[in-house]
Length: 173
Image (cartoon, rainbow, N blue to C red):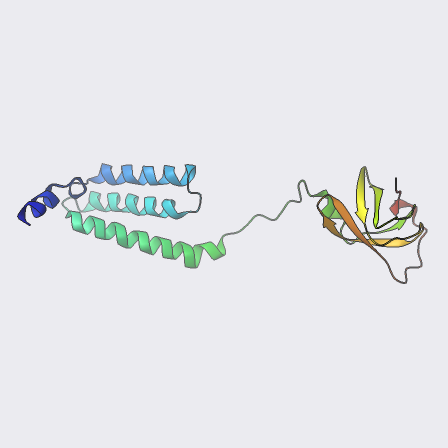
């Protein structure tokens, strides 16, 4: 038992100084950036950085207090992140980039050609789109209700009398 106590007293983690803690902080932050992008290692790195700062003000701090401080700061910083900062983290609004079909949701158009067997093609703005919907004759007003992969889903508009708007005409190929 005595040999174990001597080994513990001379172990490398009992002789950590300011630069050791800052090195641990840098390694943890690099691990966060390169391998674990979940803000876990970041807060451990911040805790190691704070222990290093603590050693500047209290130079002869016992190794047990250093590790206790690191553990305590790590738990507190992770809890603060999880309970307070994370819910307030602002996400950027979705730009719709590469999701052009979403801009057409809710748009009403008049079919220039019929839909056969639930499938057809339309030219909307500058793009030809595949559409899925019930079999409909030409001249029927439809609403774009959804997206299925790269196809638009349509359904007929009930009770729409205005079918003369030429700017919203879909042409089926």
